[in-house]
Length: 523
Image (cartoon, rainbow, N blue to C red; front, top):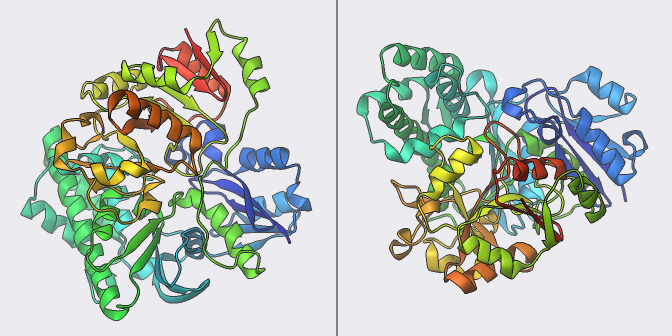
């Protein structure tokens, strides 16, 4: 059996991963350690993440059996890090290996990756079955239109670069349901990209979108919030229309493939994922939890492990807590720098605090791999009061654009949400579901105000026992089987990594109490 390091470097979302004997040991995104969001750091290198994994695993990179870099590769950095002893894997190949081999799917599976381009492609499609992957389509960057470029340059153009590519696209998606269809805007977007007969066209979507959105800015299309929402609605709609047409063509050509794996930055769009999940012919979708380029380092490791016969079929994650961990002793040592009250963690007492409206910081185990807070570095709040939005946004210095998300006991998922497909993917908060009518007024803090959908994280007791326990205690008190879960970070910061950052949030009054491993701290 083998030890395999994987790296993605020299671009946004750099990261390092390590697999030993076919098991994931650690995955660390560089932004968590540099404290610079990846969208603000488009030439980052995994210096800190690689060192942190070497330290925590006691395995030097140069002592590992294999070192895999995902393209595009900064060769000088790769040579220096590995003593010029490394292998390469294609960008979308790594996306697709990461997705399929963590999907747990058996039988026939369609495996699709799509982003703004990483090497020479913007998208690849594989047919998968029984641990085998067969490439059927590869879309060349120079000759293919890119929906990801449509989103990226719409995001930067609508705000004159106040919002950034690979960082703020979610803001447009979040406000899209508040807008409405506008034939002129839709038609203008359609000049930048269209789809027919397995082709996205014309090419150079980035240039066309940049020119269009800059022109629209000058003509006043974005000078009110509502106008931005109208534009966002049509951006979302054309994305769904074109991609669902592509999915329909795939189904017509390969009708026996009814399970779908998705990876790449486009599938950070949870509304698009919802539409794919709701297709009548689709049995299940799975969105790789680290769907963006941050997931490539693990995808590279998995690619090599499959080659070696050490990862032979798709598995399922129990969780994605692959980041750095901190002991109770190190937490206690850090706490002595502050004048906080402390007590032993009690799920019942914290559930009472939540029921009374307190904002709880939650810090357990290694931090999450990917863009979502999933119960390792989370902020928890009751979901029952709409004014929670204003309070949280004020404390976190965020904008009132993105809806907050719920975490829900798995056994009550079907009580609250429609469509029970793809529950495994919902464990990683990667797609939206419609909320049943009788719940909309009960949980307004976690529902999108216009389309009444939510982006839930399903919590299974066997996978996340401590997260399940606090949810269950709150449910016994309130009759509500879910809580609001938002990422443990202030505006424009990466999700926190270490105890010092957590304690600073408590000291600044961002949270009312901090649950950190076995202890609870308060002012």
